[in-house]
Length: 69
Image (tube, rainbow, N blue to C red; front, top):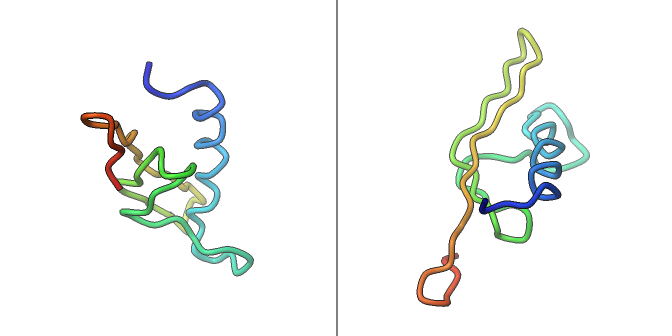
């Protein structure tokens, strides 16, 4: 397992930050790195008709001891 349960819980909460209508924070968008650079956002969707907000993420894995950024 790459991510911890804590990471997955935090990612689940961050999906609400995909909402582009919230003015109190910058919305999460594609290619952003989140959770201290441990994950990269691959795709997002904010469906205003049914309220569904989703994002696809991938863990950033270190190669040769160096973390890609």
